[in-house]
Image (cartoon, rainbow, N blue to C red; front, side, top):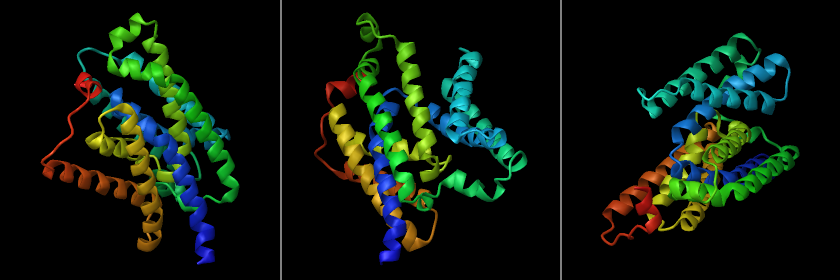
Amino acid sequence: MTAWLAIIAPAWIAGSTLALLSAPLGCLVLWRRMAFFADALAHGTLLGVALAVWWQLPMGIGIAMVSVMVVLGLVLIDDERLPADAVLAVVAVSLLCLGLLALTQLTNQQANVLGFLFGNLLELDWADLPLLAGSVMVGLGLLTYIWPAQIKLATHEALARIQGINPTRQRLFFMGVLAGFCAIALQAVGSLLISGLLVLPALTARLYSTSPKQMVIIALIVAQLGVTLGVWGSIWLDIQTGLTIVLVLAILFFAALMISKLTTSKLMPSKFWSARR
């Protein structure tokens, strides 16, 4: 049991720490309707890793470079004739293919491809936790700083503009926090599953919340439950930890959805949710 705890405890602490950022960030992703963008950034982490290994740079720098390329690329290819969600889907799958190609052809990381795709949280040890915790705290600090403006933009963008909030600048701030999260979440759940870790807790919370604050709190609880059950479940089932965490989160979401549909007395949506519709 002691030997198991030496492996599982760092992974569980790391996942729980990551969930502190993923839950509120995921709520903002839903409110700002940027789930497809988050997916594109998550897939871009593979290409960022490949470039970092190829040029012998820190992994974070490679991912940051690709994130900037994604933002600039989306600005360049923006076209009123093309649906935004379809464009983002094309960008996401293109980045995934480029990342896999670069990892397998330009680097010697072929053996680690599955880890980059689905994560390997159990490889983390106690020495990795301070850097992870510090990165999450920086992300939470930045998120707290931009939170009031982001809520106003999500609720009523025109009114936020009148109040002096710059939507473009706030969007860039939010994209920066989102890119940073993708970088630190890569080892936990992998490139393919980052968007699941972001969106699923927030979606589940949306079913039972009547205000933004309540939604964030419920999303935090769901994310922590998903990480805990996912880490222990991956040991029990002997499968990838990232896969198990996201699968548990998906089960929690569908269970919550079924319960909400079967419940006769439903909560009335607040003005915030009505405004978002």
